[in-house]
Length: 95
Image 1: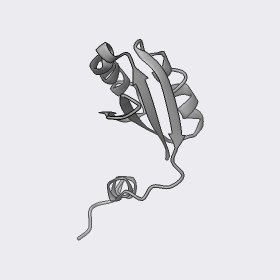
Image 2 (image 1 turned 30 degrees about the vertical axis):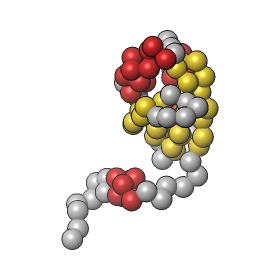
Image 3 (image 1 turned 90 degrees about the vertical axis):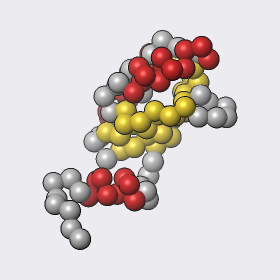
């Protein structure tokens, strides 16, 4: 699985609308409203690296109200939540 963290600057009066539109894009697992230099943070999780190009410059950057994005690709996952989700696919829970 490839995970991209996308920081998004949006038109201030359109942040909720932009966030909802981005959240509906396939491959986008979460969208957060954040403080700091950027307005939103989107988590993109896909099976193959090539899909990142389809989603971020192909769709996310074209959402009306998106002014700028900065994308970071994750090398490894250390979050227990993400590891549990990845390794539990198709396997019954064990005690």
